[in-house]
Length: 177
Ligand SMILES: [Zn+2]
Image (tube, rainbow, N blue to C red; front, side, top):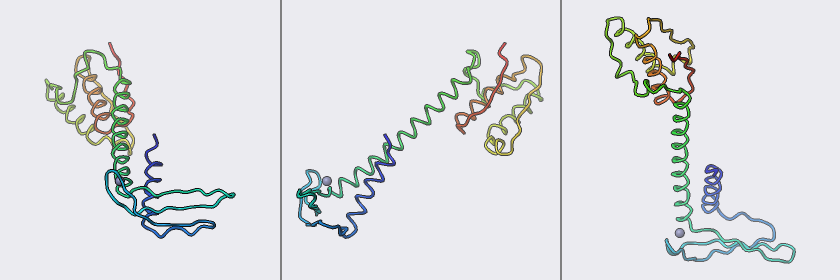
C-alpha cells in the first residue's frame, strides 16, 4: 500500500474543507448538517454537477473521520518503515553467513588476552562507532595476526554492530576455516 499517496488524498480533502468551495461550471453547492455515526453532526458540503443531462452528487466526509484516517495512515506508514528496517537488518545479517561458532560474537564479549589485543579491540570499537564517518571518508580496516587471535571475532562483531546500529551494506570478507 502506498501510504504517502493515500495521505496526500486525505490531506487534500481536509484542505478543501477549510477553503471556500471551488466555483465550477454547472455545479451547485449546498451546505447542510449531516450525521456521522461516530462524531455526530458535521457540516457537509453537497456538490451537484449537471453533466450530459444527468446530475452527479458528491458529498464531503466527516472532518473528524478524515483526521482520524490521516493519523491511522501515518501510524501504518511508520509501522511499515519499521518492518522494512527489520527486514533489511535480517537480510544483511543473513548475508554475513555467520558460521555457527561466531553466531554470538560481539565487541563486548571479545576477551583481549594481551595488551596488543586490548589495543585492537579499542580500535575496532572506535571503527564500529564511527562507521558512518569512516564510510564517507573511505578506507577500511586491515587486520593482521596469527590464527586464533580473534580476527574473525572482531571483524564479524564490527559487521554486526554496523548492521544493527547503522543499517547499511558493508562488505565483509572472512575466511572461514
Ligand atoms: Zn466522523
